[in-house]
Image 1 (cartoon, each protein chain N blue to C red):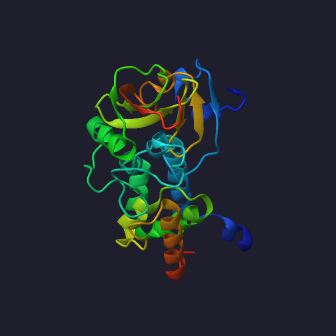
Image 2 (cartoon, each protein chain N blue to C red):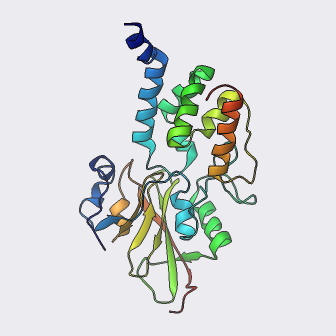
Length: 103
Length: 160
């Protein structure tokens, strides 16, 4: 019974998953980040603060995607460099996430 | 055009006029580049061009304003590709064309590049690339891309 309970996502993970899927579905066709980031689901994820970081890093590792705006907003950091491509910036963030215990 | 490759019904449904148009999916979905980069040239598959992004990993020329006005994107394609405004989206031998789409507020939503057969190629946000016969195929209210706001052209690099 305990194993079953341990495998179930927490309420905050369920909320994150629901918001993230809504955001992917409704903003996937959008090419400019201001519209993507101002979507209510994305804003609610940013509003979850550091509690959302493990799930954002999970998404970034598994699906990539445009989570860098949220990471900068929540952490106040940016481990990527100005000349980084998007792929390089994602890798820099994944290293940062590992170093800080989120992955 | 091989029209056997289609978007998922959910994605296709975002563009009502696409259903009545000939189109085909021409790539896998990819987060690394967007329509703005893809319209500037097929070599731009590693960069996401965006005036608004917060944080590193995105490209925007340092000397351009960070807004979504059509005039700003005209300057972008002039700077990056030597394009200038023109009147018609018709195929003109010896020229390459880019179409800029905007919403009802005049904010840029999308860009497409003309192909050699007079059709168009578009990257749909972080979704797939498609080849579409007409520019109107992606027009319409959100989540479609609004209307065609400007056509740009430049002399072809390849022999006409």
